[in-house]
Length: 279
Image (cartoon, rainbow, N blue to C red):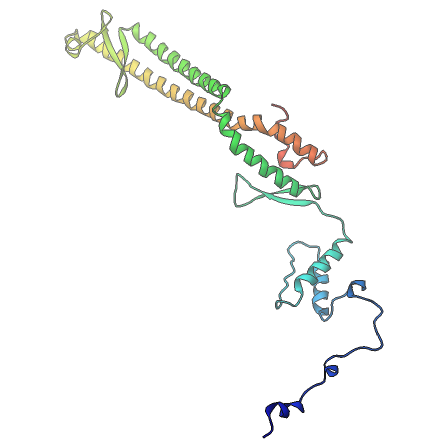
């Protein structure tokens, strides 16, 4: 009986037949690193022409859309073409989109010297972190608290002056200003003391009628005084709020603006032109 090994021998391939050697070297290089890269795209003529055509469109509103199967080299081709074309054109400015506090859905465009946008981004990131750390401290320091106290004291003085004027006029007509849960109240006086309702009702009708007219007049004066106080209070709050908003700019931005100007070769982004120069 013939063994299986013996049967397979006739199908055996000699080792010499498993390799192919070039006896005459047809190449004039050692490795492919010695070769110059191709300056053209193989098999993508229409795609290349379309990209070049799109790059010549200088009017706004035009874009280039590139699609294709994975592994077809579309990213490499596009990048190489763009790199080659960019070398023939003027280097553009850096363009940044920054937050628009008036309209968050419409960011503002900031143009910076070429290559400075990355630096600007890093500086702004550092600046924001600095504000997070140091800004709360500004509103806890003695200068801020003292200024805030002066604002309150100034408002209190205005309130006292307005009410003192009303009280002085009322006193001339035997009327006092009392503070109740419902607010200020005009009260008739007798011998310098508040008069009870019973005593007021016992007054001579003519005297009582004159006193009622004066009470109504003083009450109207107090109403107008309260309106003036509210107006002054609103004005004081607005002044305090505006000053509080400007305080961070006064404390932090001048130094940061100077830093930006130096780092950007003397130029300054347009949106920073209104920042204060000095503290």
